[in-house]
View (cartoon, rainbow, N blue to C red):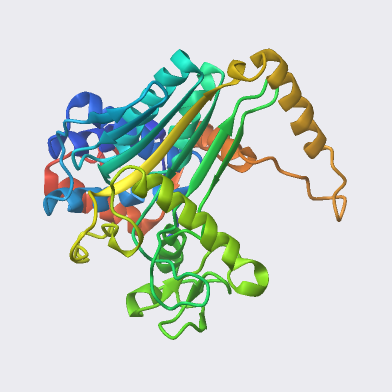
Length: 363
């Protein structure tokens, strides 16, 4: 079956209604829906509405608190630690980023580490909050342990993404949002739905051999750090993932390494957890704490234009600036709708029937 296309508003209304049904306030449901659908509209289908059922299942097993009392448990003028009270990361992370922005307004920079949260969607949704304030935004999070360090077969780290968003003047903002693995787990889920093989360098089997089976994680295999193998720099991807873990969890008191709670609700929680929930790290830097914002943005325009005009290998491909593909997806999908795979549509229909939410696109 072919993909079906839906408008942003159709999906938004449905997602808000689902989050309302599990007990979220209207404000939290709206926040969570906007963060979740920011992935679909930007072409990051692995982290969008396809994950909605996963969040609901976490709520069903009481690992997500739909009405969290998010609070600051420690702070200085420029830093804070936030307890997310087991709330949706889709709600906790924007709260934390707003704290970072307010601190940056006051003292130049703001840095917030979060404990006791859950999966927070795409990192770009949070880092980009800083852009409208003439600030550089940063967001990162640890995640379910699915990644084997270089030379190991043990799953010790998550895909642990990093995002940095920096404003420009006439040019679109620079937005680099990347997993510290060769591919995020959600990309394997897409391959599973399409019945396609995984490229070399994405995953290994339980013995550490290269695998092309997108179901390999269920058989004891592991995702690979960015680079894929030692010869291609996987030790660097491993190091980046470790940095995210330290910033997100060891600074905040969240769980780290193989003790991070798994996203699938059916996977047992790790025994003897050393911390609380999943951890995030968010930051905002006021540009004029370093130089006038207008001067910086003019330099960013010049910098971006330099890359866009760089000579290409074939003369046909163009050099992309981080954020370009997602921005192009957003323009196209805003105009023409968001395509969903049949398996995702069926999943959403089942979710709506279970929770008593009308499916807007079948009316």
